[in-house]
Length: 76
Image (cartoon, rainbow, N blue to C red; front, side, top):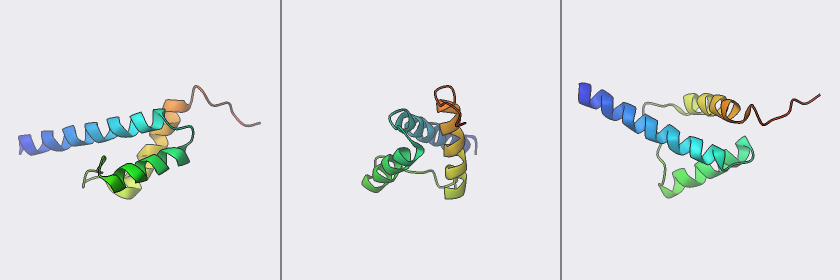
């Protein structure tokens, strides 16, 4: 059981690392989703089975905000 859990954690870590890299290359969250969908379609990224699409969307939005919060100016 320990090896399986470690493998799952490693897959998740690699997946989020790839997502963060795509976010760094994107100027908007919409551009990230375009890159993500293209990468998923061509097989260069695969969402781990235990991460639902809803969870991915929520965590991606949070990661996007954390990554770019210091650079975005608040809208007045």
